[in-house]
Length: 205
Image (cartoon, rainbow, N blue to C red; front, side):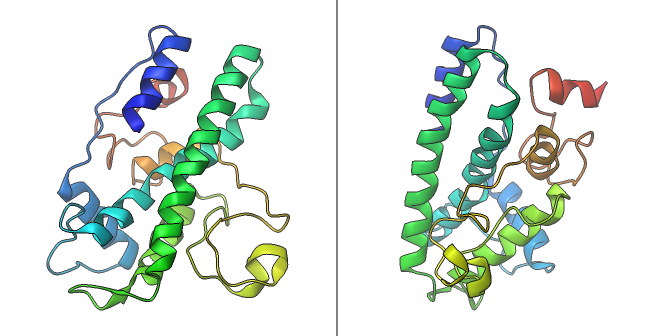
């Protein structure tokens, strides 16, 4: 899915950079350790089984979704807006499928750690909020009813704000999260050499 999105961008915006993306087991293991504040034993392996793979899939796509929401109003070109709208639609569908599959297993314990799937999503979302440094823009699968749809529902298959609209993030927030450093000028995490594009590169100069 990610490569298909990159091809769509590349055809619309010539010369689209493709920076090094690290999707290794160790990168996900480190991210999960940071999310829980402890070293999980054994280290989390995103490729070990279906549940681990779904949890790993939960880590990144939603971040991209919030980035498209936050970016679209700032774009001047109709071509760029059309591209981002198209990407957003597909990314939102992808995230909905991932969240729905995880929600079916929300109370299942992730072996051998003893934490439920819902607890994993809470910890991942909390870490993304922490790294983004812009308040609440991320929610797990089960939330207090006040944070759920219409302020009444704790099941949270689709994350949204108090108006049930998608949260938006700035490019800087996105970089802080995907770098797993909390800093837009400190590469690491899933982009060990930094992301591409003018905005990302401007922070690395």
